[in-house]
Image (tube, rainbow, N blue to C red; front, side, top):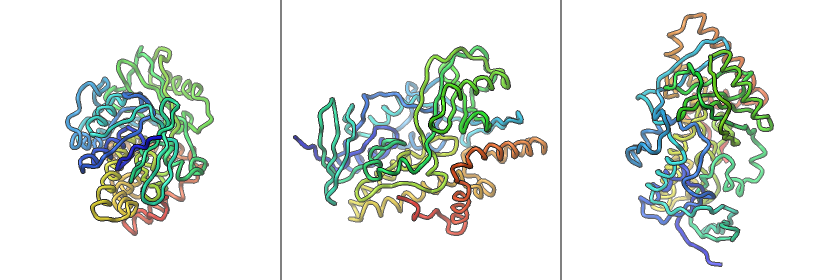
Length: 404
């Protein structure tokens, strides 16, 4: 069986992989990415990009073409809704951001990265002798082999690269189902310029809605094992009764498994030896479940780490863990209560919007948030978040001793 030799093999062909590949190909390295589907492929995602992610795409890949965007083509900000029926709208700092069609935006980015993509090719395992990594893959039922100096796992929350290094990891963290249904609009008073999020413990752990291509997305996240259709039905009834949202029956459904625990409690996973894990596979997930910007930046850092490792003749894990600390700080700060109270770790100013409310409304919002947070109590994140927040306050960064 023939074996293809490359400098770096990336598993995945999404935004993290594209950002990583761009750094590597710009440095003149030979890079191949494995993608288990044929491109362009669908991607379960709201498509609402953060201002920081928008800047990254423009700076690294150029102006965004219109055909990689949904309608409406941009999002002005976020609106929080509470059981007390108080709503708080916040504009993104820096202005509206693009509403990406992930099927085509990912394809556009990966093409502009310069990486060679082997489509319909699934990662099946790896072995390393300390110098060369031997990778097994499958295409059309045939086993393929690759040899690489470095491997980058950029293959999402259920990463197979991560599983090959830490097979028990998937059972050590809580998982959530995330599903969104697309429904034609009869009547929808919700402002289509905003992404809408509900802090309501009776609706689910993560509930959202926004307009897309003359339809309304109604989405909900809940612990794995729950019934998506029941959760969705509850949300749809709530939106109808409380917000006057009238929709036709769902035409389409998207769903996937997600986990956002690592970014809350600084439990990232970055790999072993010359195998790096990045993007959501490593645990990066911003508040409000926007993962695109941290995927782009962490992917670029993974690629830069390989380049620097080669140029300086230093162990790549040593370089990566030093460089990735900045992205850990930025991402985990978003869940850090001390940073929220005394700083502004997000790209929309919630505190400024709160000051526009009456004292009565402010108290109602605080009560609603505290009630909402109780549904996360079974995961025992509270003490870990607080301890990591205090360490960040004293030391200026989060401890790398918690990383795998």
